Figure 1 (cartoon, rainbow, N blue to C red):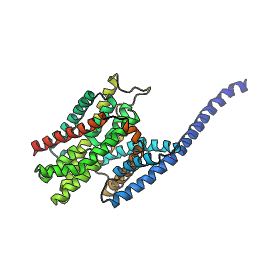
Figure 2 (figure 1 turned 135 degrees about the vertical axis):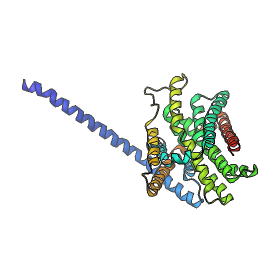
Figure 3 (figure 1 turned 60 degrees about the vertical axis):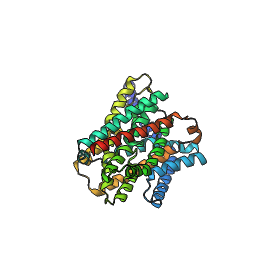
Figure 4 (figure 1 turned 180 degrees about the vertical axis):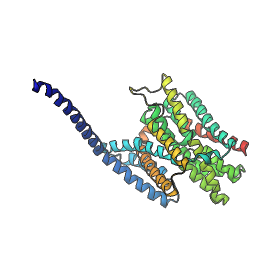
Length: 360
Protein backbone atom coordinates (compact mmCIF):
# COMPACT_ATOMS: atom_id res chain seq x y z
CA UNK A 1 0.00 0.00 0.00
CA UNK A 2 2.82 2.37 0.77
CA UNK A 3 4.22 1.81 -2.68
CA UNK A 4 0.85 2.59 -4.29
CA UNK A 5 0.38 5.78 -2.33
CA UNK A 6 3.84 7.20 -2.99
CA UNK A 7 4.00 6.48 -6.72
CA UNK A 8 1.46 9.13 -7.77
CA UNK A 9 3.24 11.70 -5.60
CA UNK A 10 6.58 10.87 -7.24
CA UNK A 11 4.98 11.10 -10.66
CA UNK A 12 3.32 14.41 -9.82
CA UNK A 13 6.72 15.86 -8.95
CA UNK A 14 8.52 14.37 -11.94
CA UNK A 15 6.15 15.54 -14.68
CA UNK A 16 6.45 19.31 -14.05
CA UNK A 17 10.23 18.91 -13.87
CA UNK A 18 10.18 17.15 -17.24
CA UNK A 19 7.94 19.85 -18.68
CA UNK A 20 10.33 22.55 -17.48
CA UNK A 21 13.29 20.73 -19.03
CA UNK A 22 11.43 20.38 -22.35
CA UNK A 23 10.45 24.07 -22.25
CA UNK A 24 14.02 25.12 -21.50
CA UNK A 25 15.32 22.94 -24.34
CA UNK A 26 12.86 24.49 -26.77
CA UNK A 27 13.81 27.99 -25.65
CA UNK A 28 17.52 27.29 -26.08
CA UNK A 29 16.82 25.68 -29.44
CA UNK A 30 14.87 28.73 -30.53
CA UNK A 31 17.69 31.02 -29.46
CA UNK A 32 20.24 28.95 -31.36
CA UNK A 33 18.20 29.02 -34.56
CA UNK A 34 17.86 32.82 -34.27
CA UNK A 35 21.60 33.47 -33.88
CA UNK A 36 22.59 33.50 -37.60
CA UNK A 37 19.83 35.94 -38.58
CA UNK A 38 20.44 38.20 -35.59
CA UNK A 39 24.18 38.20 -36.34
CA UNK A 40 23.42 39.27 -39.92
CA UNK A 41 21.18 42.06 -38.63
CA UNK A 42 23.92 43.18 -36.23
CA UNK A 43 26.49 43.35 -39.04
CA UNK A 44 24.05 45.28 -41.24
CA UNK A 45 23.30 47.67 -38.35
CA UNK A 46 26.99 48.41 -37.89
CA UNK A 47 27.37 49.00 -41.64
CA UNK A 48 24.34 51.33 -41.64
CA UNK A 49 25.83 53.42 -38.83
CA UNK A 50 29.18 53.69 -40.63
CA UNK A 51 27.49 54.70 -43.89
CA UNK A 52 25.28 57.20 -42.07
CA UNK A 53 28.35 58.88 -40.62
CA UNK A 54 30.10 58.93 -44.00
CA UNK A 55 27.01 60.36 -45.70
CA UNK A 56 26.76 63.20 -43.20
CA UNK A 57 23.69 62.83 -41.04
CA UNK A 58 21.59 60.38 -43.10
CA UNK A 59 19.44 58.19 -40.86
CA UNK A 60 20.95 54.73 -40.30
CA UNK A 61 17.40 53.36 -40.25
CA UNK A 62 16.80 54.50 -43.82
CA UNK A 63 20.15 53.08 -44.92
CA UNK A 64 19.41 49.78 -43.18
CA UNK A 65 16.15 49.16 -45.00
CA UNK A 66 17.89 49.91 -48.31
CA UNK A 67 20.69 47.48 -47.39
CA UNK A 68 18.11 44.81 -46.59
CA UNK A 69 16.30 45.35 -49.88
CA UNK A 70 19.54 45.26 -51.90
CA UNK A 71 20.71 42.08 -50.16
CA UNK A 72 17.33 40.37 -50.59
CA UNK A 73 17.27 41.05 -54.32
CA UNK A 74 20.95 40.35 -55.10
CA UNK A 75 21.86 37.55 -52.67
CA UNK A 76 18.76 36.36 -50.76
CA UNK A 77 19.75 35.10 -47.27
CA UNK A 78 19.51 31.30 -46.83
CA UNK A 79 16.67 29.80 -44.83
CA UNK A 80 18.90 29.43 -41.76
CA UNK A 81 18.82 33.23 -41.36
CA UNK A 82 15.02 33.51 -41.38
CA UNK A 83 14.30 32.85 -37.65
CA UNK A 84 16.68 35.60 -36.50
CA UNK A 85 15.43 38.02 -39.15
CA UNK A 86 11.87 37.34 -37.95
CA UNK A 87 12.89 38.10 -34.35
CA UNK A 88 14.46 41.39 -35.43
CA UNK A 89 11.51 42.44 -37.59
CA UNK A 90 8.99 41.94 -34.80
CA UNK A 91 10.44 41.74 -31.28
CA UNK A 92 13.32 44.18 -31.71
CA UNK A 93 11.05 46.56 -33.62
CA UNK A 94 8.50 46.59 -30.80
CA UNK A 95 11.12 47.10 -28.11
CA UNK A 96 12.42 50.03 -30.13
CA UNK A 97 8.92 51.47 -30.38
CA UNK A 98 8.54 51.20 -26.60
CA UNK A 99 11.83 53.03 -26.03
CA UNK A 100 10.64 55.77 -28.39
CA UNK A 101 8.50 56.94 -25.46
CA UNK A 102 11.65 58.19 -23.71
CA UNK A 103 11.96 60.88 -26.39
CA UNK A 104 8.53 62.25 -25.60
CA UNK A 105 8.54 65.01 -22.99
CA UNK A 106 4.89 65.88 -22.36
CA UNK A 107 5.49 69.39 -20.93
CA UNK A 108 7.38 70.30 -24.11
CA UNK A 109 4.52 68.99 -26.23
CA UNK A 110 1.91 70.90 -24.21
CA UNK A 111 4.05 74.04 -24.48
CA UNK A 112 3.33 74.07 -28.21
CA UNK A 113 -0.04 75.62 -27.42
CA UNK A 114 -3.59 74.52 -28.11
CA UNK A 115 -3.54 75.81 -31.68
CA UNK A 116 -0.57 73.66 -32.68
CA UNK A 117 -1.93 70.67 -30.80
CA UNK A 118 -5.22 71.07 -32.66
CA UNK A 119 -3.29 70.98 -35.93
CA UNK A 120 -1.58 67.76 -34.83
CA UNK A 121 -4.90 66.13 -33.99
CA UNK A 122 -6.37 67.29 -37.30
CA UNK A 123 -3.43 65.80 -39.19
CA UNK A 124 -3.72 62.43 -37.46
CA UNK A 125 -7.52 62.15 -37.49
CA UNK A 126 -7.98 63.69 -40.94
CA UNK A 127 -5.07 61.76 -42.40
CA UNK A 128 -6.35 58.42 -41.13
CA UNK A 129 -9.99 59.03 -42.07
CA UNK A 130 -9.15 60.39 -45.52
CA UNK A 131 -6.66 57.63 -46.32
CA UNK A 132 -9.12 54.94 -45.27
CA UNK A 133 -11.78 56.48 -47.51
CA UNK A 134 -9.45 56.74 -50.50
CA UNK A 135 -8.19 53.20 -49.94
CA UNK A 136 -11.75 51.90 -49.91
CA UNK A 137 -12.42 53.62 -53.25
CA UNK A 138 -9.26 51.99 -54.61
CA UNK A 139 -10.53 48.57 -53.53
CA UNK A 140 -7.79 47.78 -51.00
CA UNK A 141 -8.60 45.56 -48.02
CA UNK A 142 -8.96 47.07 -44.55
CA UNK A 143 -5.68 45.81 -42.97
CA UNK A 144 -3.56 47.36 -45.71
CA UNK A 145 -5.56 50.58 -45.63
CA UNK A 146 -5.25 50.97 -41.87
CA UNK A 147 -1.51 50.24 -41.91
CA UNK A 148 -0.85 52.89 -44.56
CA UNK A 149 -3.28 55.37 -42.97
CA UNK A 150 -1.71 55.19 -39.50
CA UNK A 151 1.93 54.98 -40.55
CA UNK A 152 1.65 58.00 -42.87
CA UNK A 153 -0.42 60.01 -40.37
CA UNK A 154 1.49 59.26 -37.14
CA UNK A 155 5.09 58.06 -37.19
CA UNK A 156 6.00 55.81 -40.08
CA UNK A 157 7.40 52.34 -39.47
CA UNK A 158 6.90 52.54 -35.70
CA UNK A 159 3.19 53.15 -36.21
CA UNK A 160 3.05 50.33 -38.77
CA UNK A 161 4.55 47.98 -36.18
CA UNK A 162 2.10 49.13 -33.51
CA UNK A 163 -0.93 48.69 -35.76
CA UNK A 164 0.33 45.34 -37.03
CA UNK A 165 0.38 44.27 -33.38
CA UNK A 166 -3.36 44.79 -33.03
CA UNK A 167 -4.73 43.75 -36.44
CA UNK A 168 -2.46 40.78 -37.29
CA UNK A 169 -1.92 42.00 -40.85
CA UNK A 170 -0.10 39.95 -43.45
CA UNK A 171 3.69 40.29 -43.46
CA UNK A 172 3.46 41.41 -47.09
CA UNK A 173 1.24 44.34 -46.09
CA UNK A 174 3.61 45.41 -43.30
CA UNK A 175 6.71 45.22 -45.52
CA UNK A 176 4.92 47.13 -48.29
CA UNK A 177 3.86 49.87 -45.88
CA UNK A 178 7.37 50.32 -44.49
CA UNK A 179 8.83 50.45 -47.99
CA UNK A 180 6.31 53.10 -49.04
CA UNK A 181 7.05 55.14 -45.91
CA UNK A 182 10.74 55.11 -46.78
CA UNK A 183 10.16 56.16 -50.39
CA UNK A 184 7.64 58.95 -49.83
CA UNK A 185 9.08 60.20 -46.52
CA UNK A 186 12.60 60.37 -47.92
CA UNK A 187 11.35 62.31 -50.93
CA UNK A 188 9.88 64.90 -48.57
CA UNK A 189 13.24 65.61 -46.89
CA UNK A 190 14.43 67.95 -49.69
CA UNK A 191 11.00 68.80 -51.13
CA UNK A 192 9.32 70.23 -48.03
CA UNK A 193 12.07 72.75 -47.12
CA UNK A 194 12.14 73.87 -50.76
CA UNK A 195 8.35 74.24 -50.79
CA UNK A 196 8.43 76.17 -47.50
CA UNK A 197 10.86 78.65 -49.04
CA UNK A 198 8.86 79.03 -52.25
CA UNK A 199 5.62 79.55 -50.30
CA UNK A 200 7.19 82.25 -48.13
CA UNK A 201 6.86 80.50 -44.77
CA UNK A 202 9.03 81.86 -41.97
CA UNK A 203 11.48 79.42 -40.29
CA UNK A 204 9.16 78.58 -37.38
CA UNK A 205 6.26 77.85 -39.74
CA UNK A 206 8.53 75.68 -41.86
CA UNK A 207 9.62 73.70 -38.81
CA UNK A 208 6.04 73.23 -37.69
CA UNK A 209 5.03 72.08 -41.19
CA UNK A 210 7.89 69.56 -41.33
CA UNK A 211 6.96 68.08 -37.94
CA UNK A 212 3.28 67.86 -38.83
CA UNK A 213 3.67 66.47 -42.35
CA UNK A 214 6.69 64.17 -42.66
CA UNK A 215 6.28 60.51 -41.78
CA UNK A 216 9.35 59.29 -39.83
CA UNK A 217 11.01 60.97 -36.84
CA UNK A 218 14.40 60.55 -38.55
CA UNK A 219 13.05 62.15 -41.73
CA UNK A 220 11.73 65.09 -39.72
CA UNK A 221 15.15 65.52 -38.13
CA UNK A 222 16.77 65.60 -41.58
CA UNK A 223 14.29 68.13 -43.00
CA UNK A 224 14.28 70.21 -39.82
CA UNK A 225 18.06 70.35 -39.90
CA UNK A 226 17.93 71.67 -43.46
CA UNK A 227 15.43 74.36 -42.47
CA UNK A 228 17.46 75.25 -39.40
CA UNK A 229 20.68 75.62 -41.40
CA UNK A 230 19.00 77.79 -44.03
CA UNK A 231 17.58 80.06 -41.32
CA UNK A 232 20.78 80.04 -39.20
CA UNK A 233 18.47 79.43 -36.24
CA UNK A 234 20.95 77.57 -34.06
CA UNK A 235 18.71 74.54 -33.55
CA UNK A 236 15.48 76.42 -32.86
CA UNK A 237 13.67 75.34 -36.04
CA UNK A 238 14.82 71.75 -35.61
CA UNK A 239 13.49 71.72 -32.03
CA UNK A 240 10.08 72.96 -33.22
CA UNK A 241 9.93 70.31 -35.97
CA UNK A 242 10.87 67.44 -33.64
CA UNK A 243 8.51 68.56 -30.86
CA UNK A 244 5.56 68.79 -33.26
CA UNK A 245 6.46 65.36 -34.63
CA UNK A 246 6.60 63.88 -31.13
CA UNK A 247 3.16 65.32 -30.47
CA UNK A 248 1.97 63.10 -33.32
CA UNK A 249 3.85 60.16 -31.77
CA UNK A 250 1.95 60.77 -28.51
CA UNK A 251 -1.26 59.77 -30.32
CA UNK A 252 0.14 56.35 -31.23
CA UNK A 253 -1.22 54.56 -28.14
CA UNK A 254 -4.83 55.87 -28.27
CA UNK A 255 -5.04 55.33 -32.03
CA UNK A 256 -3.74 51.75 -31.64
CA UNK A 257 -6.37 51.05 -28.99
CA UNK A 258 -9.09 52.42 -31.29
CA UNK A 259 -7.83 50.28 -34.19
CA UNK A 260 -7.88 47.18 -31.97
CA UNK A 261 -11.50 47.81 -31.02
CA UNK A 262 -12.42 48.51 -34.65
CA UNK A 263 -10.69 45.32 -35.81
CA UNK A 264 -12.67 43.21 -33.37
CA UNK A 265 -15.91 44.65 -34.68
CA UNK A 266 -15.15 44.23 -38.38
CA UNK A 267 -16.05 41.06 -40.20
CA UNK A 268 -13.27 41.61 -42.78
CA UNK A 269 -10.48 42.20 -40.25
CA UNK A 270 -8.00 39.32 -39.72
CA UNK A 271 -9.21 36.90 -37.06
CA UNK A 272 -6.90 34.51 -35.23
CA UNK A 273 -7.46 31.90 -32.56
CA UNK A 274 -6.00 34.25 -29.99
CA UNK A 275 -6.92 37.86 -30.69
CA UNK A 276 -4.25 40.43 -29.85
CA UNK A 277 -4.94 42.62 -26.81
CA UNK A 278 -6.45 46.07 -27.25
CA UNK A 279 -3.25 47.60 -25.88
CA UNK A 280 -0.26 45.31 -26.62
CA UNK A 281 2.53 44.94 -24.08
CA UNK A 282 5.00 47.01 -26.10
CA UNK A 283 2.56 49.94 -26.19
CA UNK A 284 2.22 49.66 -22.42
CA UNK A 285 6.02 49.89 -22.40
CA UNK A 286 5.83 52.96 -24.64
CA UNK A 287 3.46 54.71 -22.22
CA UNK A 288 5.62 53.66 -19.26
CA UNK A 289 8.65 55.20 -20.96
CA UNK A 290 6.69 58.42 -21.55
CA UNK A 291 5.84 58.50 -17.84
CA UNK A 292 9.46 57.87 -16.84
CA UNK A 293 10.70 60.65 -19.12
CA UNK A 294 8.10 63.06 -17.76
CA UNK A 295 9.25 62.47 -14.16
CA UNK A 296 12.71 63.80 -15.06
CA UNK A 297 14.51 61.08 -13.11
CA UNK A 298 16.68 60.16 -16.10
CA UNK A 299 19.68 62.37 -16.69
CA UNK A 300 21.10 63.38 -20.10
CA UNK A 301 23.58 60.49 -20.17
CA UNK A 302 20.87 57.91 -19.50
CA UNK A 303 18.62 59.43 -22.15
CA UNK A 304 21.44 59.46 -24.68
CA UNK A 305 22.19 55.82 -23.93
CA UNK A 306 18.51 54.86 -24.29
CA UNK A 307 18.30 56.79 -27.56
CA UNK A 308 21.32 54.93 -28.89
CA UNK A 309 19.84 51.55 -27.92
CA UNK A 310 16.51 52.52 -29.49
CA UNK A 311 18.22 53.55 -32.73
CA UNK A 312 20.25 50.31 -32.80
CA UNK A 313 17.13 48.18 -32.31
CA UNK A 314 15.08 50.06 -34.90
CA UNK A 315 17.97 49.99 -37.38
CA UNK A 316 18.28 46.21 -37.02
CA UNK A 317 14.51 45.90 -37.41
CA UNK A 318 14.51 48.10 -40.52
CA UNK A 319 17.18 45.91 -42.11
CA UNK A 320 15.10 42.82 -41.30
CA UNK A 321 12.00 44.39 -42.83
CA UNK A 322 14.06 45.49 -45.82
CA UNK A 323 14.93 41.87 -46.60
CA UNK A 324 11.23 41.39 -47.33
CA UNK A 325 11.22 44.08 -50.03
CA UNK A 326 11.63 41.86 -53.06
CA UNK A 327 11.27 43.29 -56.56
CA UNK A 328 9.17 40.31 -57.55
CA UNK A 329 6.80 41.02 -54.65
CA UNK A 330 6.63 44.75 -55.38
CA UNK A 331 5.79 44.04 -59.00
CA UNK A 332 2.81 42.07 -57.82
CA UNK A 333 1.50 44.91 -55.66
CA UNK A 334 -0.10 46.79 -58.48
CA UNK A 335 -0.61 50.53 -58.56
CA UNK A 336 -3.23 50.84 -55.83
CA UNK A 337 -1.00 50.83 -52.70
CA UNK A 338 1.35 53.31 -54.38
CA UNK A 339 -1.53 55.62 -55.25
CA UNK A 340 -2.85 55.36 -51.70
CA UNK A 341 0.58 56.18 -50.25
CA UNK A 342 0.89 59.20 -52.54
CA UNK A 343 -2.64 60.30 -51.61
CA UNK A 344 -1.92 59.90 -47.88
CA UNK A 345 1.25 61.98 -48.23
CA UNK A 346 -0.59 64.71 -50.12
CA UNK A 347 -3.48 64.66 -47.64
CA UNK A 348 -1.30 64.91 -44.52
CA UNK A 349 0.87 67.59 -46.15
CA UNK A 350 -2.18 69.60 -47.17
CA UNK A 351 -3.90 69.43 -43.77
CA UNK A 352 -0.70 70.39 -41.97
CA UNK A 353 -0.02 73.29 -44.34
CA UNK A 354 -3.52 74.67 -43.82
CA UNK A 355 -3.04 74.32 -40.07
CA UNK A 356 0.28 76.17 -40.18
CA UNK A 357 -1.35 79.06 -42.02
CA UNK A 358 -4.25 79.22 -39.56
CA UNK A 359 -2.14 79.02 -36.41
CA UNK A 360 0.50 81.31 -37.88
